[in-house]
Image (cartoon, rainbow, N blue to C red; front, side):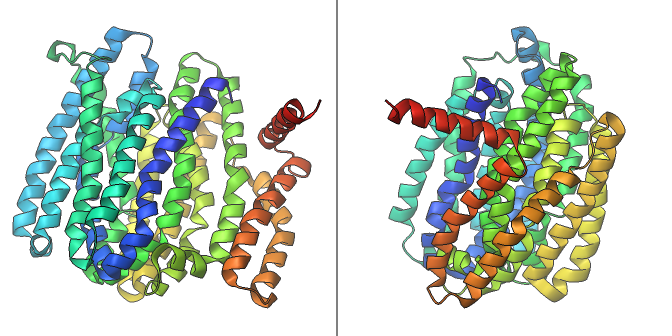
Length: 485
């Protein structure tokens, strides 16, 4: 990776992970204070609001990053792109906002939680005003990262000060939403230094198709991701929602690291294609696979094995129902990581919006059918199975289109090599986990150290991962520079 990509990835990783990490710091405290039912209520409402946000935002984030990145050397074109996309997003948000407010007062399940739902209205408006797609397109990750960290530190302190007992679940949700609101206010104020909005610069026709096409992709994708939470809340109960959302908490945080990387790579890949540098484009894809496989396998192995201990650390007693869903969901990291490379780094920069739509449509159909078949019976476990099955189908369809357009195949050989190399450490973990007579938490701490070291050695000496070899060589150079006379 070039220096600029490394710096952008660092800031983007901090930014993306902070979206999950700071709430994760508070989650062990909040889950114990509020209990599984109140956590389930908050997550159910947030799942509904998230769905309305998807309709409001549609394809603004991906299209915005792509178009701003493509024109970042031309101020006039940036102003035109921003003005058009922001106006388009304003129209969609206004329509969705009116529908949401109506639903709150006319749908009984929503009206029961009307206080939380109205706070959710603020979240919808704040998300629309966040405009981080502008900063990501300009690759201005440093600014938004610094500002986000400050606001989220205040958020963490506020949670511990104001959330004291089970009845404070509304306060908890309000503080979570206000974090987005203050970020949005800052982004809007600072954006005036970067761009100028003008109705004269608007060119709706050029952007409407990708805005809706990619937006529909996001909505269809939600039919087997975020829709699971809402559907589970309707057909089961808030406790099952609490199990499911707790089970996916660790997964969400870890995959956000790689999401940060793909977010950095999208503008860079778009620029490479714009310049016709196809060979460099392919090299970047290979580096992305190498970067991903470095941490995916050890994380999956540790999280599946030690799921009971991880759940208890995160949420405490009473969340045992989240253990099986977590073990089902964690291998998704491998599936979705590859899928993100195919969609965000290949199909989106290639502007193959129709292919993206087909991928999400197939996944949505599978998701809806399986939700109706499994969730009523298996509840949170069923939701986990729905998610895994849908993503596997989406991955297959995405790979078909990627091979069709750019002849980049599925990295099967590298995956098999990593799996074969993992067999010895899997056997060691199995015997230690079941037959070593020490605390399971002690085993977890030891394995958190041993497993990454084992996989680093595998990447360097067996897989011969260029990225890891390069990092190891640089660390050796740094060590020699600092400690060798």
